[in-house]
Length: 226
Image (cartoon, rainbow, N blue to C red; front, side, top):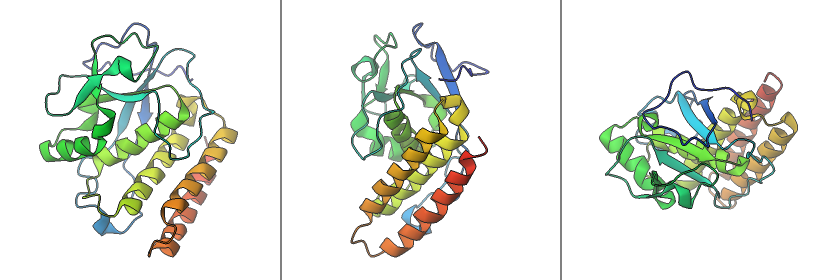
């Protein structure tokens, strides 16, 4: 994992076991799916996410296959009473977490709705704890949800937009994450397979595949510059 550190500290005092608190660049990206999928795309401009991981613990050999991300949680850096919470130490290990609270993993959709309804900037409230690549990918995927609100009626399209944003952000932060181009190449193939499976038999399958193919070419080309 790259030793880049944050220029400033969030209000939360990171546990002393956490020696890496990395600012991942998560710039706002275009909407590649039909606009009606979202009722408030980019309601809050995305810019960066604080990602934490215990020293030497990051694994990039976990596959992106649609399974639930393990060892990943969004930790509250300021008190929050309007979202479901669970103890962070139940989901993230090696941090020295004790009484710190985190967003309940089942409440991603609720957080997407409530952050939008209350106009709460996600990074003012949450930071990400994730010690493996699958967890980091889905953390970035959820970060895309938090900044772009939709009714979640077009599930495949909504998930595709967030898959692509997470993939772009992973490549943009390759050096900060410290993973290889070879592993990212495999990851992009895994994302391709996952996104394509969601559209099997879907009325928009052909259009979706064009979107997937076009964006993955852009993402693969970007890997050569990082």
